[in-house]
View (cartoon, rainbow, N blue to C red):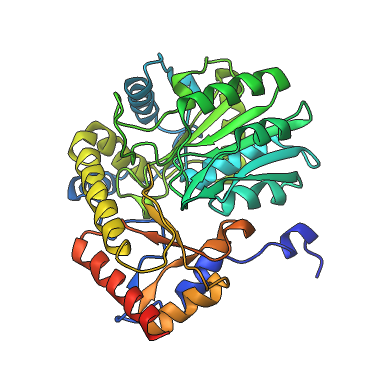
Length: 388
């Protein structure tokens, strides 16, 4: 093969590997992917239908429709207090595209990139695809709860570190940065000249008391000139995973260059999808608070159900849509996940998909319309373990 070696060496998704073994089976309760089983609200879908009917099928500005960028800026200002200007916003074809665009803008081959793991595997694969030197610092599990070894992370970030990548609230662990940790990291990265790429797509899915009803954000404490890029998505907070629509917040001087990269990657996000996103933002109060309240119930219900299963190591996540737990005596999580599909009709994601140090853990997406479905899944897990 004449492909780049870094591409040949990329690992296929272990989550997909498990899901492929069960997709199409009606008897499998699937909790492997990071999305709700609830469809996008009718009025958001209708906005896209109306836009298509009106002929909104042409190219948009690389950076997105001005009215959508303005609505995003207004939403970010509402959440985080700072006066967010339109010229700091770029609309992207999904959060994952936004993250890749940010890395393309910031990383040269050979640059050092530090990523906190376990984490959604795209965030460690993207720097490798771009030829960066990847360094990881692992969260540490204590009584099932993952915590940040802040001193170790600060030591890893040096003037040679081009980029720090953080996902908080975290997929898969639910770990969420505290304000004190954010302040320490921002101050340190200012000293070293290191950029921060903060994946904050789960910020609304936060279950601790908060004055702005979302998780601590670097946007709360940064200036417009800081070397900070924040990635967001419509996927989680608006039930729009398949629409592929997101946005980036960045220093104003960076925005036009992101626009150039968007041109050479996707040209622009689909116009009718952007119109749906605009409706989602304008009517956010009809979607997000209800969704977060329901996910809170899902989290508590599943945590209580899994608490009845002997031997599990788990804790209540502060944010996100996942319970991450360890099955003692089952170190090969990929094999375990495949067995659960085949023998118990239960579809979970293997922990090693997110980092080697998460070997033996399993991720359960609790974003389910029906709470009883979560309870049935816990019963299947307990019955399978009892048979063993």
